[in-house]
View (cartoon, rainbow, N blue to C red):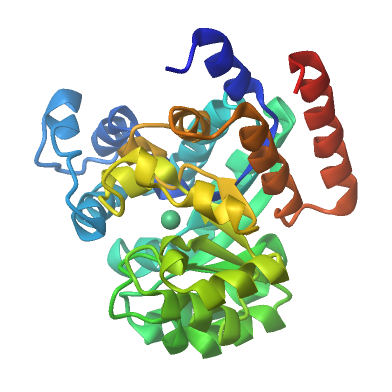
Length: 341
Ligand SMILES: [Zn+2]
């Protein structure tokens, strides 16, 4: 069992968070508050009633609730408040740098908001967060793979005039049946904007989706990548090329990608030389922010030294500039000295 001292140490361990959907940080309390503020009718009347919905059998059952609650976000202030609520928690979890996904296709085409409203609110939240907590980072515009390609193209049209306010492109939502190869044009366009490229692959989909994300989307990191385990040759390549995986242990458990935390492939990946990082994905839905994910791994066979190495990986695999990485590395080194690792 993880003791109080170790739990506290993991909360202050300096780290970056590289796989986090801002909409997935919408806590039931805030969703109810926003619904009231914006006169949205939800089928639940109390936070407790809503919380009963948080039992998921797979990715899709989670996505259904996730998209339903997203309709409570209406104004720039709502997006700012959502971002600030996350950054406060992140700060309390030792996060110094966060690269944050958002799903504008849903806000614009499903919920009929203006792209600029969403971007303004999220950016304002990040600006305040940087001032208040010193958290650096950026936004990753995530293509929702089960929405139309037309909507993906239209979002990139909207994003282009403010392309310098976005860090990268991502690919998320229902994976199986929506292979990365479908999105090669959108990723090529995003790269022409000067954006970084990452993609969810191999969460529920096969290892071949990881290969496609690398070869056809030129993804610099793979989000999840759990099924890399099924393809030894590809695993060797990912290890050799230093492609980082953004692993999300509690998410994998809650969505039944794995049956128990002991089954999580992160220890195996580390043995094979694959660069792994630890992240919270959609923490409001999966029972814990990033420190809780480190803690869940501490409950398995991972040593404190390995967990510290994972935090170091999160800094190195981030898109922060060299000066910022040096600062974060120095903070991690002081933490190690203070804690004797
Ligand atoms: Zn994700």
